[in-house]
Length: 118
Length: 114
Image (cartoon, rainbow over all chains, first blue to last red; front, side, top):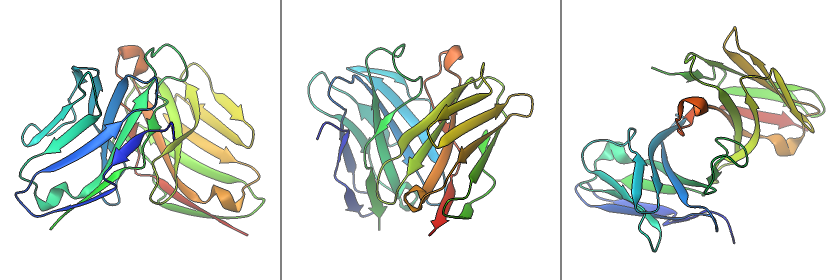
């Protein structure tokens, strides 16, 4: 499967625990985005990364949340000390290396990771 | 502040008829608009887009219209098919301003009745 791979698909955590969500972009893609969808809401931008660089994290909460996209391996979205309000679907998307090719803004999304905080 | 609004949470249409999904935006910096389709338990998939320099873009059964002065766009699906039943998200970006973020609406759930 050459699509965007996210795991785990479902994650249950108790308040105060840590959640780690992983994303492998499509083959050949070097740009990764994380979006969050709260119940009955649209997707909200969190962070945009390229390999080893955070390009735009303006949508990421200042505390408890962090993201990385190392030179090797998947992108990781880490949520420390989770609270019930963190329960949501977290979608990763990727796009090709050159933003001048293809359709601007056309992102390829994974199936999402659904986090439930008890 | 919701910059992209889809005011109809749901829409039901008979198979074979036209589906019209609407979207309004407030940010004048938006210059690229996209529609994404989402099935339950799946990620959104890109459907069609339009640049702010155009007023219409067509791809098979799907046409997107942009009224820049009204800050309004719409997606027309004709003829509608049962497989089109999904949630449709309108999204916008300020691409020319160097922003790679997509701002999404809350979505409209389309049900196409056989």
